[in-house]
Length: 115
Length: 115
DNA sequence: TCCATGTTTCTAGAATGCTAGAATCGTCGT
DNA sequence: ACGACGATTCTAGCATTCTAGAAACATGGA
Image 1 (spheres, each protein chain N blue to C red):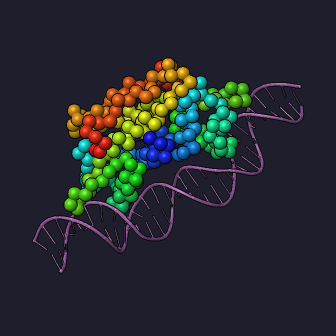
Image 2 (image 1 turned 60 degrees about the horizontal axis):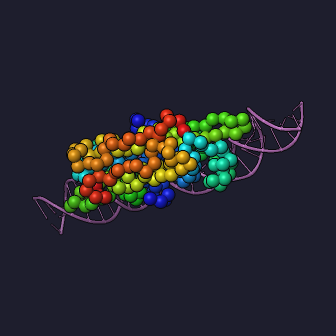
Image 3 (image 1 turned 60 degrees about the vertical axis):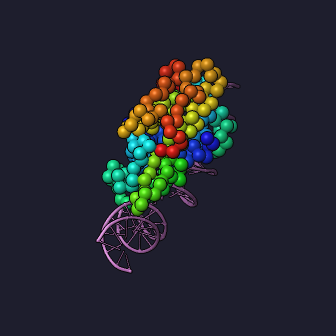
């Protein structure tokens, strides 16, 4: 993951409403949630919700799939993993022996990059 | 980690200059770096640098210790770990069996919360 | 086709965040 | 005590982001 996409992910999550939305999607795992469900969970106006969902998708943190007139959103776990890896990259470069973090994250959910 | 501090961490990192600073501090591990070093690494004006360092400290992502007239900064790995845990919390709540992420991060660097 | 429903886009105003020059504060060496 | 130096704070202007009402768009059912 390059700096740019890490920054997009971080900016995407650095807002309480978007963080709420994302965390809700995380709890929903591979199932995801349609906009109405999300709205019930977080409780703010439709246009605001749409604004933030767009932000999450743009940041690569979520994906949207149409289901008739509903739209289902899923958290993008791969993006989250990438972000985590990015943050811990080069940790304690000077003295890796002292470091318990660096590059040891056996992540990615079973079932691919989506959902 | 509660929502508020996670949000602070995320906001702290969601800015390219602060992210650069933080990542540089991460590479410096327990050694940390004085402001001059950081300035050489990232290359922007003193007041801007100070502004962002303050932001990182306020977000709990870095700590500052005076060394004569120098100030040494360290990345706060504990905060980063906390953030990572927070993000992956409750992952796939509906069907944990399907999830490879949830609560399995053996993190925290050797040597305590500082550094 | 027409209406109801679900979602997104448009818009403006308010709030927040960023940058960098100038001034300030604290520490060290002489 | 004084000057040099490292770092932070102050300030103002600029840019970005957030919110929510209104309008628009798309889909499904009657």
